[in-house]
Amino acid sequence: MKILTSSQAKLIDKLTIEKGIASETLMEQAAFSVADIAETFEPNSILCVVGKGNNAGDGVAAGRILKNKGYNVEILIVGDPTQGSPDFKKQLEIAKKFQINIYRFDVDEINYSQYDLIIDGLIGIGLTGEVKGEVAEAITHINSSGSKVLSVDVPSGISSDTGEVLGTAVKADQAVTFGFLKIGHLLYPAREYCGEIKVAPLSFDNSLINSINRELILEDTVKNLLPNRPEDSYKYKFGTVLILAGSEKYPGAPILSAIGAQRTGAGMVKLITPGDSSNVLALEPSIIYRSLKKEHFEEKDVENLKEEIEKSNVIVLGPGITEKAKGFVTKLVDTYKDDKLFVLDADALSILKEKDVKLNKNFVITPHVGELSKVYKNLKNDVFGLEEYAKELRCTIVFKSSTTLITNGEKTYFNITGNSSLAKGGSGDLLSGVIGSYIAQGLTTLQACIIGSYVIYKTARDLSLEYTNYSLTPKIIADNIYKTIQQLNS
Ligand SMILES: NC(=O)C1=CN([C@@H]2O[C@H](COP(=O)(O)OP(=O)(O)OC[C@H]3O[C@@H](n4cnc5c(N)ncnc54)[C@H](OP(=O)(O)O)[C@@H]3O)[C@@H](O)[C@H]2O)[C@@H](O)CC1
Ligand SMILES: Nc1ncnc2c1ncn2[C@@H]1O[C@H](COP(=O)(O)OP(=O)(O)O)[C@@H](O)[C@H]1O
Ligand SMILES: [K+]
Image 1 (tube, protein in one colour):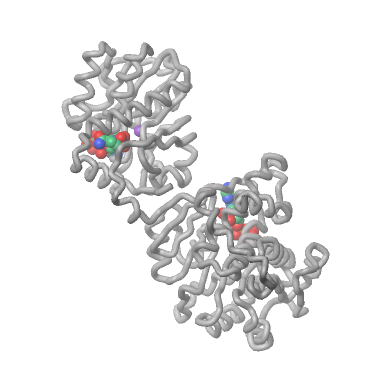
Image 2 (cartoon, rainbow, N blue to C red):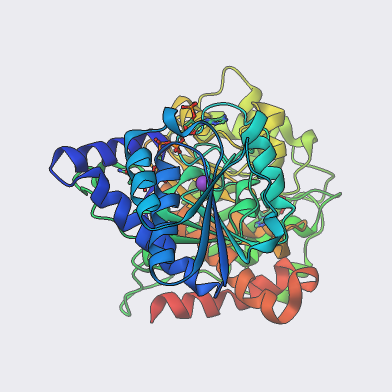
């Protein structure tokens, strides 16, 4: 499922209209979908609260369709309708002929609570700047009405490019958007304001769609990424993952990375750690384990580990290493950056602060929001900034959050499969091992991040039905990864 910016959505609108599909036709289609979904609320009375742009045009047209079907519908206009868009004004003239009561926010007193359903057609993708004045007041009334709310396109007040609330925003039970998702539907806080999101088809011109470089990860995106596993094969065909992780302080993190790599198909998983993570062998004896028996990795260990490093295909570096391993990370990356594939997580990300070290396409970095803020800046709602950063680093970034963004600067994937069961220490450690495993099995770094994140998040989502988001742990997720792989393999 492709994801658009507001300007891409407007361009697709424009191209469609230029090819001869009238804007009225598109608006009628949009309104029909809004009306269809409105009916699922089984309302007796409906209030369409509209502004004066085309989002309002959709809202008025949907109101008229519902009125014509026999529902009790009224319209409230916020703003001066004489200043409205041509399509909105046209819809208003039509609505009048269907004997709908039309109120004005600045003139009429409205009891918002008397309606079962409010259709929010105040502002859609045309939002510019913070919502203030009458529109802000109307939003407050909608939110305190206690009525069900269906937003047209995006909840009014939500930026469709960043998912931020600009001033104030409508809290919807459902949002119906047209043709494609917008970035704003998929990021927090907007995800909480949208409620359930429906995508209704419109007769859009699809000729641009292949050039749209943002996409939502769904099962279909991932299914054909499962690496081939020919019967006539042997372990080295599926790659060697070397996990350089842990410290005396954090012996658990490397265990989760190693198990993640082992349970997703890597041919060989080697874990080398400074501390004592020997419990890994009780959990999974097939992992090759060695302890350096010290507090943390040191720069000289790069030389000591030469043989293991050179025999590996991909190195997962960082989980639990602590900041004290900085010299080791810098030396390792500097020495092998052109010859080995890397997944850099946790404290290995401190490398990003080093001006002299340049990453390249061999690298995946997996920062969470806090880690990226520490080494670069806060990009939580800035997809464009993240894409620029990936281009600058020339690597693939897995930006871990409640919505995880994966980008190499050219293509960006949104992962909304996870849930708050993952908001626990160790989930990221597990993920880094899984990504390493898929790289070892021959996927591109971008592909490995897409399937790796999906496999962990989907397993977590499914399991949390039984375990709850409170009690599910990364280890239980690791033990059940096979269930998601089974689904992908069927
Ligand atoms: N072809 C079609 O007809 C199709 C149309 N579609 C629909 O059109 C929608 C886009 O319509 P659009 O471009 O007219 O913009 P829209 O979202 O109505 O916003 C503009 C209005 O908002 C106002 N406004 C803006 N910022 C504000 C603020 N901060 N605070 C207060 N007010 C603010 C702005 O006021 P102004 O700044 O002009 O005074 C203006 O009145 C799209 O979301 C979808 O629903 C689709 O169904 C596809 C087919
Ligand atoms: N509320 C949430 N919804 C969905 N996914 C989440 C949520 N909170 C955390 N996650 C995911 O869980 C993982 C946590 O990673 P991280 O914080 O690095 O853990 P750790 O370093 O302790 O192993 C990330 O992949 C993140 O995207
Ligand atoms: K809206």
